Length: 110
Image (cartoon, rainbow, N blue to C red; front, top):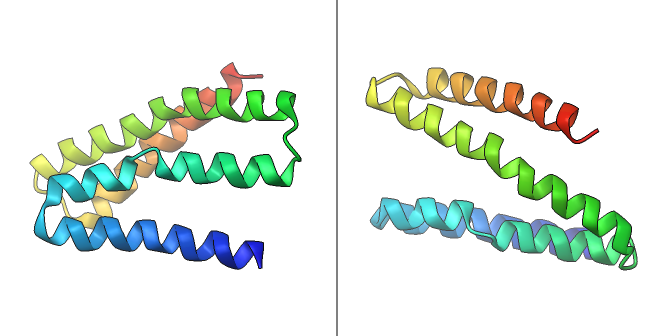
C-alpha cells in the first residue's frame, strides 16, 4: 500500500507540472522543481528508516549538495534550447552534464 501511495503522489506531481506547464510554462517549470518532491522523499525515507537521525542528516546533506548537479542539468538544457537543438540532443547533453556533476558530488561527499 505504501509503495502504491508513493507512486500515485509522484505521478500527480508530474501530471500537475505538465498540465499547468501547457498553459503557463514558467509555472509548470516551477512545479517541476519545487521542494514537494524533496519533501515527499524526506517523508518516505523518514518512515522507511524509522526516523534514524543520522541517516536523515546524511540523506538531507546529499540532497542539499545534489541541487548543484540539478541546476547544471537545467542550465545546459536552457543553453541547448537557445541553440535550437532537438530534444534528444538537449536531454543527452543535460544528462551528461548532470552525470558528470553527480559523480563529482558523490566523490566529494565520501
